[in-house]
Length: 322
Image (cartoon, rainbow, N blue to C red; front, side, top):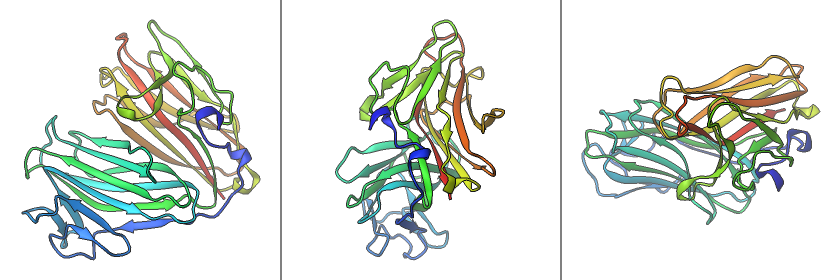
């Protein structure tokens, strides 16, 4: 499909969802490192150790060192967007070399890293939207790499659920050429470049993580006016974004502000990335769309004179519910 995204809201009728997988870690014994039930998963290495595995009194899963939690979720019949929610806590003071990475994989496709935690105290709500395909499983993996057992991660729930009864506009930039500065396809957008040394274009990410829209200085990325189908008018709209940083975009002078407007009205802020040193940030907001017939999105950049300080918009979505 042209444009690196999915169909616009105006072209997609509301449809029922069909996937709901929820692991709360509340039905395993202390120290358990696997589950063979309806929400099957495994923790590797599986050898029992202190402060490792399920903590039954807390309904959490604890992991540290070089370990990984993984679940393969079957999906026989649903094609469409799936929301992934993971609540992850941290114990101890994480160092720069301590990292937790979250990935998903559809079928036998590429394993995609959608979130990372470094030196951020918990709890953290980690989210992603996965484009599911009927007949292809979804694999969720949490990879832990900490230096000792005093620095641990605790998962308190992992949930996958189909985005039900809605319509979906998503730009992932995947099908666009490197250097693209406009999209005239199904998920159309434009950009405005401003500031000395500014960039605003599509680039390939490292380590096989797809593509993103790179933006710096006083530049703006702006979507088309997204028409809401009649069936979705009067409900709610969920907005979702994933942003990475490049260079030293963690200075107090560096900001990326996400905005939306309803029916061509005033712009309203829904996320602000500022003074962040991690390389991945996710944001989500819910908008009441009473009397809304359209929505438009934009990201407004304000970074310092250092030309290497940039933000990377990995994906941006709007989902309207009936």
